Image (cartoon, rainbow over all chains, first blue to last red; front, side, top):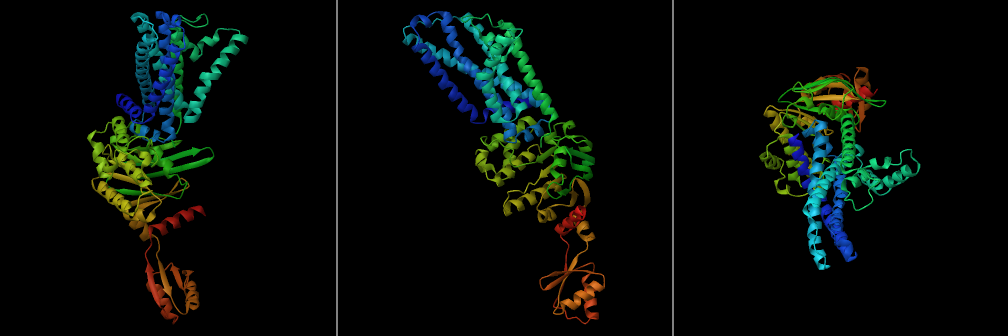
Length: 253
Length: 294
């Protein structure tokens, strides 16, 4: 398992995909931080709570972690490297679990970089706007802890979904469709028609929202931090188990 | 060393492998031959644990591939020259496999040297020619210094020099006591490389033996030219020999050159050429697989 995990980690580091995703992430984060501070009224970014919300810009890394997990897993089928992967590691369970763990580790590293960049840019942009940098250690650390955990789960979900779907374009398009369209629609339908109008809270994006909720927004429709984390763990387990079952059942021909 | 016993694999209504059995012993290069769709690749993938058989057994060193301890260091395989991430450098591709397969780090540079890719090791595989990819696939197969090699069409994309290099490499690996199972469409190449061949057709076993025994057991033909070809053809057919016309010559099967000469002399037919044609592996292959088709 360690050998397989080490190999998966090396795979992540040895293509240019990671470089371009990091460039894209840095550019988007910079844009969001600068735009978020510059276009806001001074009083809207002055309080520690407001500035903690700005740390949430690092959540973009979760999407990149998800996409990276998808690309790495589906890439095995797209490029035919799944054959050599399974020759080197015949245990398909080891391959699926190693990919999930590698996806988690990568996601944590990515969020670390993203939040580091957000903090650095806030430390420069806020004083330039005449606002003191007021993020406090305790709440920030708690938020960062939760975002690291959420990122790890998203990375593993990406790996699992990628191994299950196999088609790279289908997987990436499908995930974007889910994130930006399907989940919102389902949530809206559940709220308007379902017997349990709160069932939407258990959807992945809503559960992530619960984990990362800083309390600034109306959180009545969200689960608690702990419950959100438990639900997100459930989604991760579902994606990994599905990947494991399908990988074991399928012939590699 | 490699044992396939009564192996069966069905894809929907198609029986890809139908009760196939054969063995490969250490120190032998065994050619695995069959027409397209004969079930060669499926058999090799079953041996390597990539495809599940419906019944039968496919073992290497007495165990299924997944049951072997560190299988990557016991069995090397080339299954396709397309199994590379185009954006990854060749050396990194091998490093990834070495890590997962418990092969030594130092082996990466060794195998790159063996396959002649040390100069291109830091190039991305996307820029490789088909021949270079084939060499890289062979490097990956040799990474664990395995005692068994399973190669599916390893000569694809290699230039004549590369084919000769591959032949010498496989012979030297077999001389070290390794078992080599190699499927190929290049029958002339297999004839020069393999000690034995296993021939299959439509998933079924057709023949297994040394190249020499198979070509010897198959009747050769005699090429004969005569200004009285029509008369000679009649006499040869009358004697029970099979005669085909090949331009201005006759190709005679079912009798030796002496017999053809004697018939010609007895019939007072002048001969301009009387040449025995040695049976090639290709003749045996087509004879056996065509018989199967009938």
